[in-house]
Image 1 (cartoon, each protein chain N blue to C red):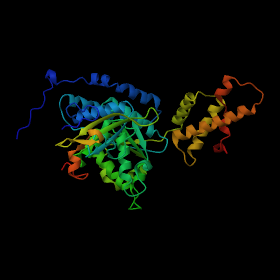
Image 2: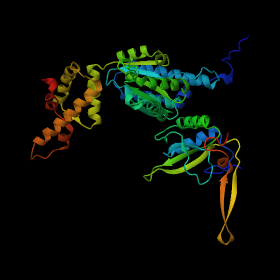
Image 3: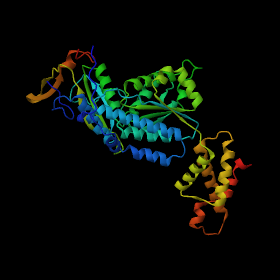
Image 4: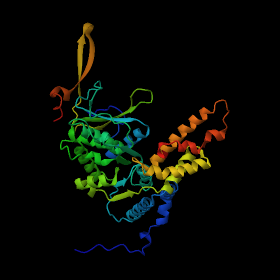
Length: 140
Length: 299
């Protein structure tokens, strides 16, 4: 099951040229760029691992693109996203976030039904990938 | 093995108009600005024109599919302090941008402290961060020889140099590196880092200014600061320049700026001493001879 999180996630995967163009756009807006990765694709997992520090004061996409490629080299079988932060309101706010890498195979989620008092049902989802192995070995 | 036929010049598609390319790049304006704004520096200006011509021809060749590989544009600027290295680097960034050799054309000016860390593992991220900021523009490393400290073999400068070298070689399209500093020390630096020196194609040497050029520079600064010099001040400045040149720590144009700043200070004090008089526009603008003559250089 294809994970759809963040901007462009219903489009086909972005090519490197397209990723670069998006980063270029973000830099033109004066936003900072951060690269993050995770192997826990649960939609409530907001805090992914940071790939280095966010990059401030870049003028050209080449630097950030280099980090995306380096992250992909190290974590080719994980989810990688690019975040763009806008600081114009005095704190860094995510203005753009899109996935730039995903595992070859995405097993999807198990829908769990939990019956509580009065036969009421509570639903929760659990990632098959997260359930099958500890962090770092889930998409091997 | 047969050679591919060389393109024939008479073929109509195989033509390129250098003048059109020149007009297209708006490079002439930058070069003229450079000539107009900077006093003296004749050899430097000539080299920049040559470099611009090379890049333009390279572009023309490219448009006809003659691949020569992108030329190496890393440079070294050598010269005494205050000879205009940073200013020319700024212009260089503009020129390279107009010619399409750097994408953004900004200048990131750094020194050793910005590149080299304080403990193990600190240098690489620091250098890389600066390099990322400089991508698409020009990285100007002032007093580059401080990166290399032969007396301390555990110095982290070497690590910065290695990362720099790698990027200079592999990401030539992404950024241009300019190393700057005193001539003699740069030569020693290049001798001990042959890898670096072989990757730098353009060496520009900035000559010291003559007293006449320094006077012209000072007059331009006066004009920019919206002051005027009285006749006595002009005479005093003329006398001041050769005296200052013989003193230690003379830094060409920078010394001129400092001299003017101190003259402004004395002018302000002089005006204050004229208690009870209303000042005219002329009073506020004029620097008098005594404002220069009070300098310790004259003692």
